[in-house]
Length: 183
Image (cartoon, rainbow, N blue to C red; front, side, top):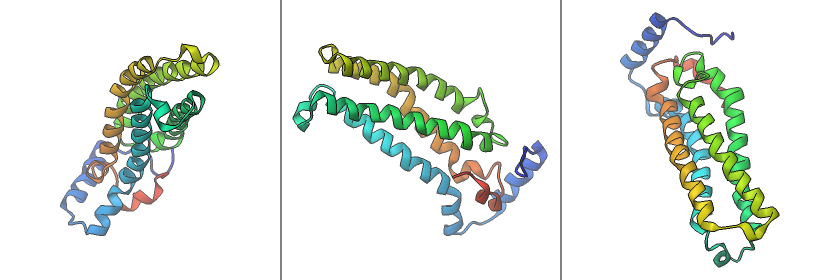
């Protein structure tokens, strides 16, 4: 493991106690929240794209788009979410999971990713089918698929950001360790 290895429960409690007793400046609090804020900016983009595709699934022509153009926009949500999750799972979660159990393999955030991937694959398959056979496209069906996906995706994005807020990080990490975070 790296120099930022897993630590004993006693050491974690000591870090949490030191962090809880310190009076943090506004700038330091901002530094603690930097990771959550950064993640939330990505998540906000996904929320906006999701909402755009969902809202216009049945009236994309009002945007002046062809079905093919609309489906390309819809597919970008899948592509970007998949890439985002791959980066998280390969670089960010392993680092965080050294101390934060909710990021460990098989725990809260990775389980949510697995559940989301099922919905994302269904979403992608539907879009690919519609791209190949436009007559099979039904906006209400896409919205139903997205509703199911959104029931996992939206709460997950909120929970992930909450886990990355300074209040949570201070339970596990020392302030000077924030510089070692892979984001």
